[in-house]
Length: 119
Length: 107
Image (cartoon, rainbow over all chains, first blue to last red):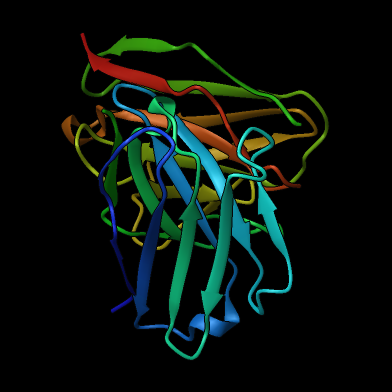
């Protein structure tokens, strides 16, 4: 069964940093692009970042470029999102998803991890 | 960036109704338009990809169509489990963008 499991969320102060992880199983991770999508409380879906299957291509929402960094370790079937200079408006549930860039749909989603930025 | 605009933002309908949700892109994106369903407190689910392809396990009452900048999601006969929020999304280029969502409520 294809499965994505996020971890690393939590409460962080404004200006702080956090690293999210997404462990994949049930498919050949290195064959697929991956994405991060977030959803602020009561709001819609917002694509955050995507990465190609090899990791050579990385893509970001314009508003997040420079603060967030996406990466992957294909040997560990794990996707990461490094978040710096966090702001209150970054508070959201963060989902990892299989696909989403290079013309593909996001066909598998994790359960999400909650990030709360507050003092 | 490609802007995605859904209409309506909310919709009330009854079980058995035929419902259509539209999505307009700010530039041509064919065929890279996908539809997702999200229920309250749940993870989004892929319904339709590449404009009109039904994702595995999705009931056949869901269908998608369109081309260029204008796309539709149709539910042929609403079932109780279909009341949810629906999002369109373009994967034509990055940054990937979603529509603002259409909340489908029970009349």
